[in-house]
Length: 242
Image 1 (cartoon, rainbow, N blue to C red):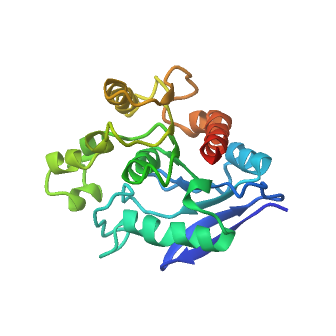
Image 2: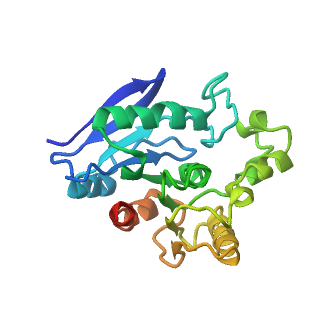
């Protein structure tokens, strides 16, 4: 039977999903949570898709770190979230499930949505498949509200310089990208639209759904996107295999 378990990787917690019947291709996902740190263990819409496609999934706990290559004391006093993912989570998956990076898809919601985009753009040849739900790309706009981001950067401009928009490489990008966001998402829709304009102007192909509305920046919307997002990841992993 499928089940969740909670483990530790490099002293950090992570939730792991094991499907009843793992797919024959060894495909698996890293899913990054949002700023609210809600876990996936009871998100039925996503669990159904994981089980349907036989996906092993790991959901690291990253606190409110934005999954960046900057120290967030709430997460760790020395190790950055990016280093944790790249040097510990990925090798753990490769050893435990005998997979390569090309068999690992990236998905994330809100803070985690921008996190997977950031991660994929750092290593696009290794992680060619990424799907972001309501990605909080312009996270620098939260600077000054007493959140952990205030300790991560000296000012709002420094935070802006760390956004994925400023690290898009028109010569090297993840080959299979999907960005979805509810047009009723008053906080983050502009981020997704800005990302679309940036990628389009750079000639970088990406799939989008910026039209479907199902509740704004809520789990009603996130759950409504589960089939599309997980299905895209599986399709992307299949294409990357060729």
